[in-house]
Image 1 (spheres, rainbow over the protein chains, first blue to last red):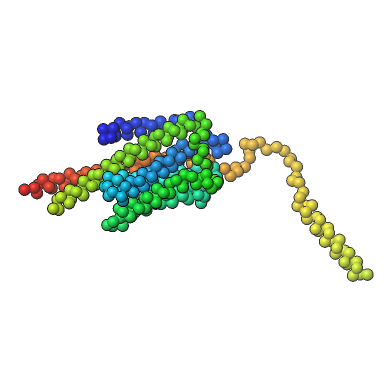
Image 2: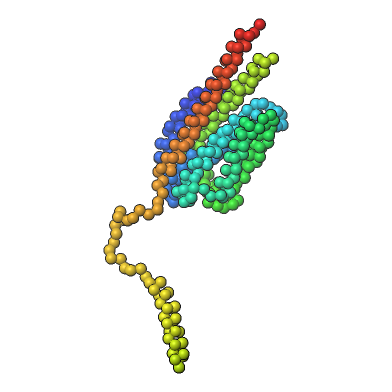
Length: 218
Length: 94
């Protein structure tokens, strides 16, 4: 991955640069108009956020079970990325909702549960930073709850029929929207993979620094 | 006799008022004197979509680039600390 990182970063940057062209060419939904093009990044960001919360939860469970430091590094990186992509979802969603629904926010199940998922990721990071000794295990337990929340976020729109579109929207996108959507999704998944690699590397270097300090003190 | 006349007048007045109010209230709007071209219409409440769309995409770009920059900055700091510590360790080594 180390050798592939820079080429992949260039590919991701190129894909990001070309994304507006794809989006401009893509169709928009009839009743909502041009603002519905926010879909092309909003929904994939949500998918990446949910994936990241799951990765964080599974890695945390592994850490709690086996005390594997590598799993802990993956968990902390995934928690940060859950917070980042969650922020993107929470900011772009209301921008779309303002035009489509006439309101910035509604406390309906999908929005509320996504917000709670984002808060769990932030709580994880705050606990890691400020809770002192033992905070890694406490945060890991939080992350497991965050992962449990993910399926509920996903199915919430199908169980409780509210303002938010159902999960059937993405698989049934018309051809004019399908191409740009999956292009943007691929771009964001690639970006996630690269950010994850860089963030895990940072944790590895921090661990190496801690080891050096300990060795130096001895 | 006077009392009966007053009662009749009062009943008549009440009937007129009670029937006149709905009749006046449900009058159809006055007829148009002329057509107004659509381009001359007053601005109704409408939310422009383009600024919302541009804001959303700008935010995604800024958030991604800012996060990448924070990783790069933190990584540089940790690697500088590692190098400094390694130098110190070499100097103090017996």
